[in-house]
Length: 223
Image (cartoon, rainbow, N blue to C red):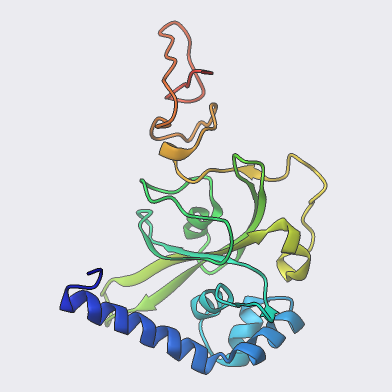
């Protein structure tokens, strides 16, 4: 059985309880109407409903009723070490499960600008372009001198829905060079000339030339 452990069953019940609580304090129709009215401005939604930035992001990633559909968002939460502690995808974007995510993704840059919302147009290897917003969130867990819980959360959607978001204002969607080329993670990313590559791509042989330097530490063959 999938939930054979008592501890696992308790974790599942806790997760469902948290989901129910979010649905209770952020009623679907009321929250969706406010999101559309405010152009999915996360800060304004948080102020209106009295909830945190992260809570708004997580709720936005669940608004996919067939008869009342919001923007199909992807939501992720990471720590400084790159560990993914929350992920939610309402569409075809799926996060890597084999190693870390892409270091060129703005969710990691957010730690360099605490509390500030960062925007990014990002292109995946399959050519699809997404609009991502990212920001750090911090929780005090104890008194003075005690460590805080620091995360970065990101919310993304396909550019086809970007016009519905306040965060699209001022971005150049017409320039093909604007999007940052990113991937799902080094081991499953087929970009041959990525300077940030940390691991070789598992789907192609290496093509190492000892007499030539390369932008990528793991140059790949064309085969």
